[in-house]
Image (cartoon, rainbow, N blue to C red; front, side, top):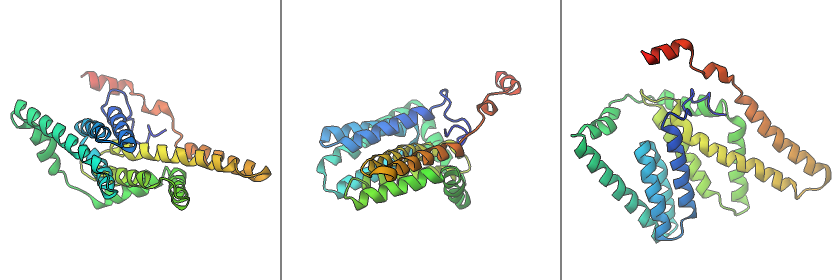
Amino acid sequence: AMYRLTVAWYDVARLDALFVALLLAAVTAARRARTARGWALAGALFAAATLTKHPVAFVAVALSADALLRGRRAVLAFPLTTGAILGIAFIALETSSGGWFSFYVLALPAKDPWSAEIFLNAFVKDLFGPLPIAIAAAAGFLVFRWMRGLEWRFWAILLAVTAVGSAWSRAHAAGSPNTLMPVFATLALIGGMAFGEARKWAGRLKGDAAATMRALAGLGAIAQFACLVYTPGSLVPSTRDTAMNAA
């Protein structure tokens, strides 16, 4: 559904789909981690995701900090594993490339100008514009879980850091809509849970109230997808595009 919003960056020939897959795998491991071994697995997956696209560092830092604040000592395995893997990878790539790795990954991107206007538009135009219902559903879901004493903090942190990290990457001169894929994935998860929770809550109601609540949840999901409708044919490479690529 987000294919048009990212200007076709979900194409299987690009690394972005792998990046999102590794990010979600790392998030899943972090959410389920209870022991040092579990956190080490999450750290390894975050390292793999970072080596695919480095903005994932926003998520890793936020989740590990939250776990540390909760007094979970086993989480120390998380940054240690991530740091060790990234350190070894950096040394190996820097040495084998004769210094070109740090130039392309660190020095060159640091020279890209950053725009506060593009950063704000990433929220206003890229997120709130096409995804108002999903965002409202996600916000309602978090508030609902907070009020009922259910797990909400993890999802709130994940949504906040993927939104800020995606917008921060988007605001660079070389940024493009594909940088928004992490926050799109998070909204898909939390928004989907919100609609499911609404229908589940409707089951506790009686008669017309239950039917009305289920109908509203279903209509909300349909309306959000309607906001994302596009013509796939417009994204298929033209004959001219194919010729230019061949040249």
